[in-house]
Amino acid sequence: MIRSTIEISSTSEDHHVARCAAAAIGLSLVDAAIPTPIPGIKPGFANIVILIVLERYGFRTAAWVSLLRVFAASLLFGSFLSPGFFLALCGALSSLFSLFLSGILPKRFFGQVSRSVIAAFAHISGQMALAYFWLIPHAGLFSLAPFFALAALVFGIVNGLAASYFSESEKVEGLHQVPIQ
Image 1 (cartoon, one colour):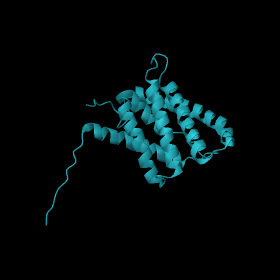
Image 2 (spheres, one colour):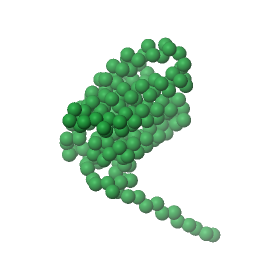
Image 3 (cartoon, rainbow, N blue to C red):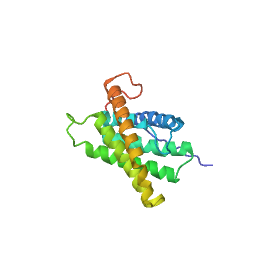
Image 4 (spheres, one colour):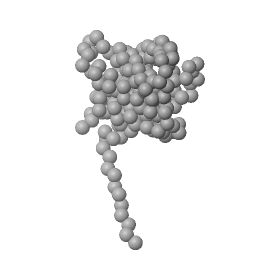
């Protein structure tokens, strides 16, 4: 009998991404547990982790954490490859794209809160576009836009303030700054 061993080596960056993704996944579970009056409106607490990672470690690491969160959360919720998964993925990709573009904005005028609000609006815009072009091709869908926009504004501000607070604090376990090579 021939036995072979597969050895997978990991780097400190891999461990760091995994810790940050685990924090984001945990916050996604918290989001799912909070009842909301309108389906689809969630606080998006995992975005706090994404914003902190983006500021401290750059876009590449933030994208990894965000996408790992979407895939892992969908597996935990049993929604992998369902319309909900694709809505979450489209929202995350739209949000990441807006965060990438917001990187060219002057940091003097655009901080964590404004980037969070931009990402929240991009997230809901991406989801509504996908819902319209794939799931519900009816103009009535856009009657929900004011509710989603208000939620994006409120939760974008709240999450941006939280990310700003935690970015300033060195007390965040597992998110301390480690040089990534």
